Length: 258
Ligand code: 48F
Image 1 (cartoon, rainbow, N blue to C red):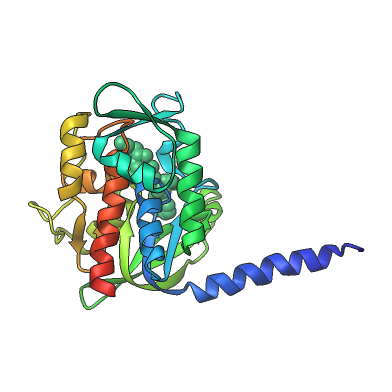
Image 2 (cartoon, rainbow, N blue to C red):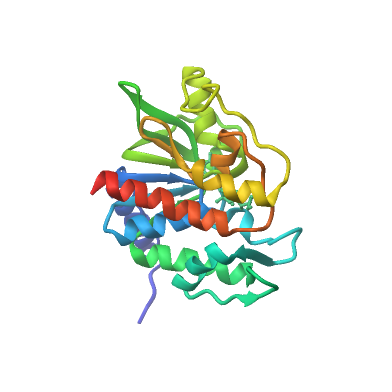
């Protein structure tokens, strides 16, 4: 068989455009492809919801690849082990209640199972704004990450969604946009982003479940973004809370949207 370079190019462009146009109107849009975003995407897509995840970087996985300080292992506590098992990710017991897993296996398996469940991931796109209609978040405003890094003045494009999850990690970038644009009207004690507190795994992991919630009509937070928005500590390379937070936000939205 003779290979035609133009046919290869057309296959890529047409395949991508078909997906991108299709996913301009979704049930749930997730910002950020770290462990919480991927886990949320898996459970939502598994229920048959139409879900798109937008990730700024080339690679999916956020802060998980490098484990702790580039030692590529992660720790998960007893509660989070259930989710590792559900994804068939291997883990070894390390003392009572602590389990160690390979960060590469964890990220790649989360990503693969989420895609197979029907999550559509768009990488290399940055969320730079939100769509708000009648005091409710109704979509995301996107641009190629390369546009931002090159400092180009190029207008973005918009997608519509019934719910948005901010899973952008420590920087809680989507909530930050909302706070900047509409002022202190978030569902927090101060109405503003309360800011992440110093490392404390015990409290950070406990509070993340409470912090996984709707922060503004139509806008939900999961993972480290929840702790940053609600003023709780970071927890470092223990990842059970990220997986459980992703699962919790998915359950909330499945109940709401189905
Ligand atoms: O940071 P990240 O892994 O978030 P997470 O799911 O997990 C946190 C842990 O990795 C770790 C921790 C564990 O205890 O504290 O930090 O809460 O993944 C966030 C992803 O969001 C992307 C970013 O590149 C990363 O992959 N991201 C951030 N801002 C944007 C974005 C944006 N504006 N648009 C698109 N993607």
